[in-house]
Length: 157
Ligand code: FES
Ligand code: FES
Image (cartoon, rainbow, N blue to C red; front, side):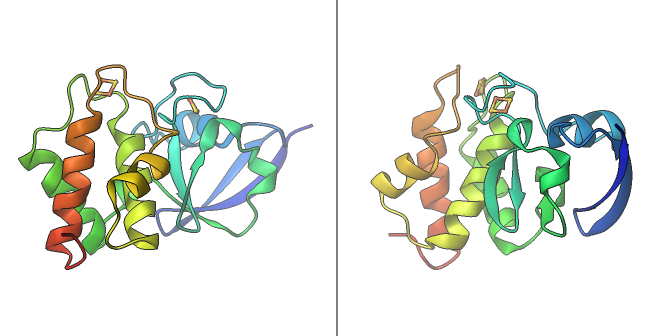
């Protein structure tokens, strides 16, 4: 049965009408038009649909809308703080994307990582980013861009 849910997305409250088991991904894309959140596998395996939930990177395709409650959702579009600004600049400077499809999710997970670990090691990056797959194999550039952003934020080597 459909119900109304109140979601806080990118700092704004939205009311959506959905069945309780509707994945957040479809609410964001189909009801709120937030297409920066990508559909990849739909099974929690690729990370293309990553969003921040209270600052943690989660898979929107696996999160029923009824389980979100008052937690704050942030998509790539809503990432505007200093960390995000430096990450996006590093991504551009190092030409990270190839086809680009996975990159929204990559940036979301990188943001969650730098909030938690301002000066991540290669291994911290590999662990934090392991749920975000890139069929184009941009992993080395992603790692370099995270180090560059961390450095400019005062945390990197
Ligand atoms: S679409 Fe959600 S993890 Fe792949
Ligand atoms: S840049 Fe193409 S899948 Fe990652």
